[in-house]
Each structure stands twice: as structure tokens, then as C-alpha cells.
Length: 431
Image (cartoon, rainbow, N blue to C red; front, side):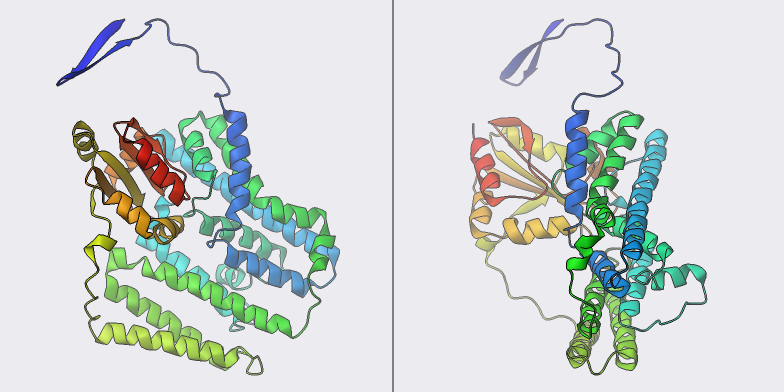
């Protein structure tokens, strides 16, 4: 079948062969490469800021275990089992949503204020445990497991693995987005294979220590310095909890978010002052830091924030709302288009924004007269953004793409933006 598609003064001839629909292969093309991508993406997740606090807690548990190789092996195997179990649960949930025809996307659970609230509570419990506030089981068995997950139990190590996976879901690491996009568009058996490989990839460091416990023995011997390490890990986890609390501002307002952060800071300050090791060199540093942060929150609640100084227009990107029509209109006028989809809960998006999109030469490139910058916000559920990503076989953010006369179909960039690649792609889009 040959036909001609016309649009104004433009035309394109297309030829298609009409016949029987080819049978779907049991293994989609590129599955092997995507399995490798899933392994690499899962492995890199361990280095993302979402997961590092949990890695620190596991380090603390190793030090408490001393030189007992059997205990170290069992704990790391339990953590690996928790990671694999979480990814299998995610695969089951995605399968159910896919069969139900629901919108899919990586990290979309962070669009739910109830889920964010639960994560705030859980990370705060972990922080208090590292501060030494809980030295015995809580009345609730479930809360007790959460509060003692950094302890010596196998169940606690299993919970650490599940918790690490949960914290990793809003992170889009290199190779991860490509593998997840392939999985969501592939048959169910390929979807489960990709999610299994993601779990295996994230478990590799833990499995390595479980198989070679001598690796853990390279760490320094337990001593008084462990108390300082626990405090540092507690601060990392508390920072994660406070960051999650800031995400509530999208749903409940800025004032509620600040009240939650002030409450968490006050409770952490009081409990640390009562339970913390006053002999530790970090004790007064932590007390002063928490007091200063609490005072900053009080000032923000009592006084309206001062007007920010007017930023030079030449130092900002003139963002416009994202829409399919905006892309089509810009292309019809021979312009180039840069698309950015991000969210408040997307850690990688924030890294891209500060590391690339705030650079003067990138801003200058996006302020050219023939460049249109379009931005979409996925902090809250959006059927349009979910559909926009699905049409491009993408289900996670950050999402960045460049269109232009030289790239009419667009070129999707890596989740971790690179300044040189972005500017080069924009230049190539001129045609």
C-alpha cells in the first residue's frame, strides 16, 4: 500500500506491506541487552542518594557483628532476599496494573500523600534508632521490627533490603530507565525477567559480601568510633525523612510541610539530647545543628519569607507548559524544542537541574530565539504526562528530549543529563 501524507506545503510518500500479522516471538528482540541493562541499573542504584542511608545502616550492623563470618553471611543473604522479594512484589503490582489498563510509571507512588507520610514515619523511626532513642522493642511488633532493623536479627536485615528497594523507586539510574521501559512494553514473562534482574543487580554487593565474608573483615575493628558513625548515619536518615516531608507541600501546602519538619526536628532534638552519647565529639554539633534548623523552620512559619531578589532574566530558562500542540507548532515554525519532565520527588531530576540546567552555557543555548523550552511537572498524578511518556515508550522520569528540523521525531536523552551532549543535540536539531 502506497500513500502520500500532506501537511500544508509538505508531503511525504510512504509504502507499507499489508499481510498477515507476524506472530509475537516468545522472547522480544533485545531482551539479552535489556537484561544486562537491568543488572547494571540495579547495581548503580546502590550508589544513589536514596539508598546510601540504608547502606550505612548495614555497615553499622556489620561492625556490631564483629568477626562472626556466619552472622555476616546470614545478614547479607537476608538483605539480598529482601531486595529480591521487593522487586518481585513490584513486578506483581505492575502486572496487575498493566492487566487492568492503569497508568504506569516509576516512582508514581510518591504522588500519594499517604505513601509519603508512611515513608516519613519509617525513615524517622530508623533515624531515632540510630540516635539510640529506642533500645527495646516497641509495643507494636511491626514497628519494633522497623525500629530495630539495624540490629542483629535476620528479620531486620530482610526489612533493610525491602526498605532499600522502597527508597530506590524514585531514583532513575543510568540503564535503569531503559530496562524498565522495555519491561513495561514487553510480554509479562519478559517483564518478570527484567524485574528479577534489577533485584539481582541491586543485590550484587550484598551477595558478594555474603559469599566472601572476608570482604567485610577489611573494615576497621569495632571501637568507640562506632558511636560517632551511628550519629552520622542517623543524621543521614533524618535528612531523608525531612526531605520526604518537603514533598507533602505539593499536597497539603507549604505551612503543613514546615510544621511536620519542625515537629520531626523537635522530637529528634529532644530524644538525642536525652539519649545521645554526651561524650561523643559530635554530640554538641548535632544539638546545635538541629536547634538551628528548628529555629529556621519557626522563622519560616511566623514570618512570611522575604521576597527573593529579582533574578536576572538572562539567567533563567523561559519554560512553557508541555503539550503535544506546543511541540507540533514549534516544529511547524522550524524551531527546536527541549522537553523536560520532572517532579519534586525525583532525586535525579534535581541533580540534573543543579548540575546541567542551571549552567550559564546551557541556559544561553535554551534561550536562543529558535528554541522552545517545555516543562512538565509529574509531582502529582497527570494522565497527560503518563500518556505522553507511554507514547514514547518511557515510564519513568527524568525525561528529556530534543526536537527540531533535524530531529523531527525527537531524540531522547540519558536520564543523567550531560551538558556537552545536551548542547550538541540541540545543535544537531537545527538540521
